[in-house]
Image 1 (cartoon, rainbow, N blue to C red):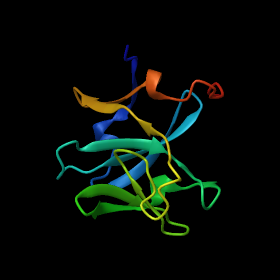
Image 2: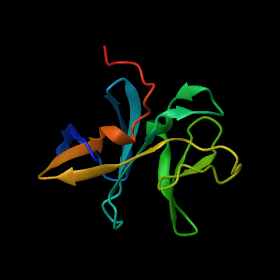
Image 3: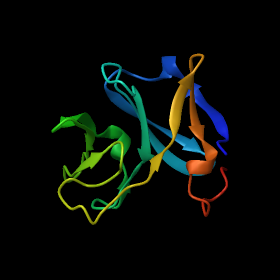
Image 4: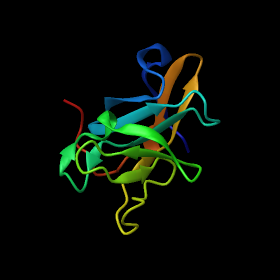
Length: 120
């Protein structure tokens, strides 16, 4: 069952850009693409190739109709819906359930890793 938690206001998001939010100890990269049907995506902020929490600073767009973020470090592209790396499909980043409800951006706590550290 979904456990939605408010993360920020939709006013805190920048169109076609990313922000990072600490959600129950997990760094979540949130991307708002107002021109797409889903509009908002959430993935883990950790770039497994660059070994750094930087994906929220990546460029977003679409490749072959798939919404993607390009890592700012080594430029791998990650599908924002599945988390799969387009250049190496054996690599995948976490994808989290997210929605906008009454102007509030919410993440489903049940979609976060169960072994996460508690927020400080």
